[in-house]
Each structure stands twice: as C-alpha cells, then as structure tokens.
Length: 83
Image (cartoon, rainbow, N blue to C red; front, side):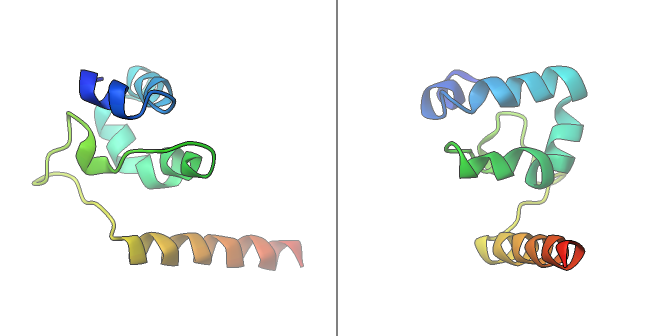
C-alpha cells in the first residue's frame, strides 16, 4: 500500500493490503465492488481509482448511481430469497 492510502484510510488499508497479498492486485481490482467496497458500511473505504496500482486503461470504476443500482439489486435479490 502506498503511504497516502494508509494515511487517508488507516482502518481500511490493512484489509486492502491483506486482500492484495492473498489474491493479488488484479483480483482485488476485479472484485473490489463485490467484496471490499461493502465494508464502507463499517468504515471509510477508498474508491478504486485511489489505489496506487489503479490503471484507468485496464480497470473500470463505477459511478455512484451504478453502485446504488447494484446494491439495490442485491438487496432485492436477498429479500426475494428470504420471502
């Protein structure tokens, strides 16, 4: 992890570092919104484009509206399973 990310997100940085060490940078970038970003409910999480290994030519980011839509769809799916 870069020093600024550690300073800006001191609680989240260890989780991100652990995921990178365990799975690699590419997999973290690929599965960020599904696995790490939801931790934003508990702590402040960075956007993908704040990572030191983010490459705008290789990695996509989601707009806030897209994130809301994705999480709403997941909530609807879970509610459907529950009922």
